[in-house]
Image 1 (cartoon, rainbow, N blue to C red):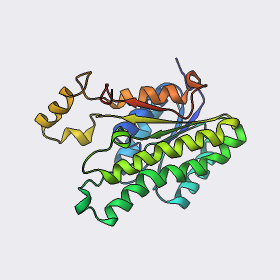
Image 2 (cartoon, one colour):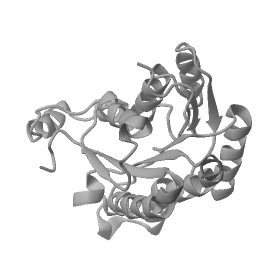
Image 3 (cartoon, rainbow, N blue to C red):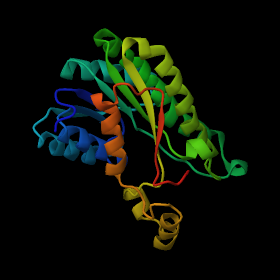
Length: 248
Protein backbone atom coordinates (compact mmCIF):
# COMPACT_ATOMS: atom_id res chain seq x y z
CA UNK A 1 0.00 0.00 0.00
CA UNK A 2 2.99 2.31 0.62
CA UNK A 3 1.30 4.78 2.97
CA UNK A 4 4.63 6.52 3.61
CA UNK A 5 6.16 6.41 0.12
CA UNK A 6 9.16 8.77 -0.19
CA UNK A 7 8.64 10.19 3.32
CA UNK A 8 11.64 10.45 5.64
CA UNK A 9 11.17 9.25 9.22
CA UNK A 10 13.51 9.68 12.19
CA UNK A 11 12.94 7.19 15.01
CA UNK A 12 14.89 7.36 18.28
CA UNK A 13 15.79 4.25 20.25
CA UNK A 14 15.02 1.87 17.39
CA UNK A 15 17.53 -0.96 17.78
CA UNK A 16 15.08 -3.18 19.68
CA UNK A 17 11.55 -3.59 21.02
CA UNK A 18 8.87 -1.08 20.06
CA UNK A 19 11.27 1.23 18.18
CA UNK A 20 12.48 -1.61 15.99
CA UNK A 21 8.88 -2.62 15.24
CA UNK A 22 8.07 0.95 14.15
CA UNK A 23 11.17 1.17 11.94
CA UNK A 24 10.31 -2.09 10.17
CA UNK A 25 6.66 -1.07 9.65
CA UNK A 26 7.62 2.34 8.25
CA UNK A 27 10.18 0.80 5.85
CA UNK A 28 7.58 -1.74 4.73
CA UNK A 29 5.28 1.19 3.89
CA UNK A 30 7.89 2.95 1.75
CA UNK A 31 9.49 5.42 4.18
CA UNK A 32 13.20 6.14 4.19
CA UNK A 33 14.25 5.53 7.78
CA UNK A 34 16.86 7.27 9.92
CA UNK A 35 17.09 5.84 13.42
CA UNK A 36 19.18 6.12 16.57
CA UNK A 37 20.63 3.65 19.01
CA UNK A 38 22.94 4.13 21.96
CA UNK A 39 24.31 0.97 23.57
CA UNK A 40 23.03 -1.71 21.15
CA UNK A 41 25.57 -1.12 18.37
CA UNK A 42 25.37 -4.58 16.76
CA UNK A 43 21.57 -4.55 16.77
CA UNK A 44 21.65 -1.09 15.22
CA UNK A 45 23.87 -2.21 12.35
CA UNK A 46 21.82 -5.34 11.63
CA UNK A 47 18.58 -3.30 11.66
CA UNK A 48 20.05 -1.03 8.96
CA UNK A 49 20.47 -4.07 6.66
CA UNK A 50 16.98 -5.40 7.49
CA UNK A 51 15.39 -2.06 6.60
CA UNK A 52 17.34 -1.72 3.35
CA UNK A 53 15.89 -5.08 2.25
CA UNK A 54 12.57 -3.23 1.74
CA UNK A 55 14.23 -1.19 -1.03
CA UNK A 56 14.35 2.05 0.94
CA UNK A 57 17.23 4.18 2.27
CA UNK A 58 18.07 3.44 5.90
CA UNK A 59 20.78 4.73 8.21
CA UNK A 60 21.47 4.24 11.91
CA UNK A 61 23.11 6.94 14.05
CA UNK A 62 24.71 6.39 17.43
CA UNK A 63 23.30 9.34 19.36
CA UNK A 64 22.11 10.20 22.87
CA UNK A 65 18.66 11.80 22.61
CA UNK A 66 18.95 13.24 26.14
CA UNK A 67 21.91 15.42 25.04
CA UNK A 68 20.64 18.75 23.63
CA UNK A 69 23.65 19.43 21.40
CA UNK A 70 23.79 15.81 20.16
CA UNK A 71 20.10 15.99 19.19
CA UNK A 72 20.73 19.14 17.15
CA UNK A 73 23.74 17.53 15.44
CA UNK A 74 21.69 14.39 14.73
CA UNK A 75 18.89 16.29 12.98
CA UNK A 76 21.46 18.26 10.92
CA UNK A 77 23.13 14.98 9.91
CA UNK A 78 19.80 13.35 8.95
CA UNK A 79 18.77 16.38 6.86
CA UNK A 80 22.18 16.33 5.14
CA UNK A 81 21.88 12.59 4.42
CA UNK A 82 18.16 12.37 3.54
CA UNK A 83 17.26 15.89 2.38
CA UNK A 84 14.60 16.49 5.03
CA UNK A 85 12.58 14.87 7.84
CA UNK A 86 8.78 14.47 7.55
CA UNK A 87 8.10 12.24 10.55
CA UNK A 88 9.67 12.16 14.02
CA UNK A 89 9.03 9.32 16.46
CA UNK A 90 10.39 10.06 19.94
CA UNK A 91 10.69 6.54 21.30
CA UNK A 92 14.00 6.50 23.24
CA UNK A 93 13.51 5.82 26.93
CA UNK A 94 14.70 4.01 30.05
CA UNK A 95 13.37 2.84 33.41
CA UNK A 96 15.03 3.01 36.82
CA UNK A 97 12.24 1.70 39.04
CA UNK A 98 12.07 1.92 42.80
CA UNK A 99 9.81 3.09 45.60
CA UNK A 100 10.02 6.83 46.24
CA UNK A 101 11.50 6.33 49.73
CA UNK A 102 14.48 4.53 48.15
CA UNK A 103 14.74 6.46 44.88
CA UNK A 104 17.91 8.49 44.47
CA UNK A 105 18.10 11.88 42.81
CA UNK A 106 20.26 10.24 40.12
CA UNK A 107 17.52 7.68 39.35
CA UNK A 108 14.93 10.45 39.04
CA UNK A 109 17.08 12.76 36.90
CA UNK A 110 18.29 9.97 34.59
CA UNK A 111 14.73 8.94 33.70
CA UNK A 112 13.49 12.52 33.23
CA UNK A 113 16.47 13.28 30.96
CA UNK A 114 16.25 10.12 28.86
CA UNK A 115 12.45 10.09 28.53
CA UNK A 116 11.23 13.69 28.69
CA UNK A 117 14.14 16.03 27.95
CA UNK A 118 14.94 13.89 24.89
CA UNK A 119 11.48 14.70 23.49
CA UNK A 120 12.11 18.43 23.98
CA UNK A 121 15.58 18.13 22.41
CA UNK A 122 14.49 16.34 19.23
CA UNK A 123 11.23 18.26 18.77
CA UNK A 124 13.05 21.58 19.06
CA UNK A 125 15.72 20.46 16.60
CA UNK A 126 13.22 19.05 14.09
CA UNK A 127 11.17 22.28 13.96
CA UNK A 128 13.42 23.95 11.38
CA UNK A 129 13.06 21.40 8.52
CA UNK A 130 9.36 20.87 9.31
CA UNK A 131 8.56 24.60 9.40
CA UNK A 132 10.46 25.04 6.13
CA UNK A 133 8.35 22.42 4.36
CA UNK A 134 5.16 23.36 6.27
CA UNK A 135 4.51 19.72 6.99
CA UNK A 136 5.34 17.24 9.71
CA UNK A 137 4.06 14.53 12.00
CA UNK A 138 5.57 14.24 15.48
CA UNK A 139 4.71 11.07 17.41
CA UNK A 140 5.76 10.90 21.06
CA UNK A 141 5.82 7.63 22.97
CA UNK A 142 4.23 7.91 26.40
CA UNK A 143 2.72 5.04 28.42
CA UNK A 144 -0.47 4.11 30.25
CA UNK A 145 1.72 4.65 33.35
CA UNK A 146 1.87 8.34 32.42
CA UNK A 147 -1.93 8.44 32.58
CA UNK A 148 -2.70 6.33 35.66
CA UNK A 149 0.60 6.17 37.55
CA UNK A 150 2.26 3.05 38.92
CA UNK A 151 3.76 2.24 42.33
CA UNK A 152 7.55 2.05 42.11
CA UNK A 153 7.65 4.15 38.92
CA UNK A 154 7.12 7.74 40.07
CA UNK A 155 10.08 8.92 37.93
CA UNK A 156 8.88 7.02 34.84
CA UNK A 157 5.24 8.11 35.33
CA UNK A 158 6.32 11.75 35.73
CA UNK A 159 8.39 11.59 32.51
CA UNK A 160 5.59 9.96 30.52
CA UNK A 161 2.90 12.35 31.87
CA UNK A 162 5.20 15.25 30.98
CA UNK A 163 5.35 14.01 27.39
CA UNK A 164 1.55 14.31 27.13
CA UNK A 165 1.48 17.95 28.30
CA UNK A 166 4.45 18.82 26.09
CA UNK A 167 2.90 17.20 22.99
CA UNK A 168 -0.44 18.96 23.42
CA UNK A 169 1.34 22.31 23.74
CA UNK A 170 3.38 21.62 20.58
CA UNK A 171 0.17 20.70 18.73
CA UNK A 172 -1.28 24.12 19.64
CA UNK A 173 1.92 25.98 18.68
CA UNK A 174 2.62 24.28 15.36
CA UNK A 175 -0.84 23.38 14.05
CA UNK A 176 -1.07 26.52 11.89
CA UNK A 177 2.08 25.34 10.04
CA UNK A 178 0.53 21.94 9.28
CA UNK A 179 2.77 20.18 11.82
CA UNK A 180 0.91 17.62 13.92
CA UNK A 181 1.89 16.34 17.35
CA UNK A 182 0.31 13.23 18.87
CA UNK A 183 0.99 10.77 21.66
CA UNK A 184 0.89 6.97 21.73
CA UNK A 185 0.44 5.38 25.17
CA UNK A 186 1.28 1.66 25.09
CA UNK A 187 0.10 -0.70 27.81
CA UNK A 188 1.75 -4.06 28.50
CA UNK A 189 3.78 -4.75 25.35
CA UNK A 190 5.72 -8.02 25.13
CA UNK A 191 9.33 -7.42 24.03
CA UNK A 192 12.82 -8.76 24.81
CA UNK A 193 12.56 -6.96 28.15
CA UNK A 194 9.42 -8.83 29.27
CA UNK A 195 10.70 -12.21 27.98
CA UNK A 196 13.01 -12.53 31.01
CA UNK A 197 10.23 -12.00 33.57
CA UNK A 198 8.53 -14.73 35.60
CA UNK A 199 5.99 -16.47 33.24
CA UNK A 200 3.31 -16.72 35.98
CA UNK A 201 3.52 -12.96 36.64
CA UNK A 202 3.30 -12.19 32.93
CA UNK A 203 0.26 -14.49 32.56
CA UNK A 204 -1.38 -12.67 35.47
CA UNK A 205 -0.95 -9.36 33.62
CA UNK A 206 -2.41 -10.86 30.44
CA UNK A 207 -5.44 -12.18 32.32
CA UNK A 208 -6.16 -8.70 33.73
CA UNK A 209 -6.34 -7.17 30.21
CA UNK A 210 -9.79 -7.19 28.51
CA UNK A 211 -8.30 -8.55 25.25
CA UNK A 212 -6.53 -11.26 27.31
CA UNK A 213 -3.09 -10.82 25.75
CA UNK A 214 -0.06 -8.60 25.88
CA UNK A 215 0.49 -6.23 23.00
CA UNK A 216 3.17 -6.68 20.35
CA UNK A 217 5.59 -4.08 18.93
CA UNK A 218 3.55 -4.35 15.72
CA UNK A 219 0.37 -3.30 17.57
CA UNK A 220 2.15 -0.07 18.53
CA UNK A 221 3.78 0.30 15.09
CA UNK A 222 0.35 0.15 13.40
CA UNK A 223 -0.99 3.17 15.30
CA UNK A 224 2.28 5.03 14.63
CA UNK A 225 1.86 4.27 10.92
CA UNK A 226 -1.65 5.76 11.05
CA UNK A 227 -0.41 8.91 12.83
CA UNK A 228 2.58 9.27 10.48
CA UNK A 229 0.47 8.93 7.33
CA UNK A 230 -2.07 11.21 5.66
CA UNK A 231 -4.84 8.97 7.02
CA UNK A 232 -4.59 11.05 10.20
CA UNK A 233 -4.22 14.44 8.47
CA UNK A 234 -6.88 16.03 10.73
CA UNK A 235 -5.66 14.53 14.01
CA UNK A 236 -3.37 16.44 16.37
CA UNK A 237 -2.94 16.92 20.11
CA UNK A 238 -4.36 13.46 20.86
CA UNK A 239 -3.33 10.62 23.16
CA UNK A 240 -4.10 7.16 21.82
CA UNK A 241 -3.85 4.21 24.19
CA UNK A 242 -2.63 0.91 22.74
CA UNK A 243 -3.37 -1.23 25.78
CA UNK A 244 -5.90 -3.96 24.97
CA UNK A 245 -8.49 -2.11 27.03
CA UNK A 246 -6.36 -1.92 30.19
CA UNK A 247 -7.51 1.61 31.04
CA UNK A 248 -11.12 1.14 29.94
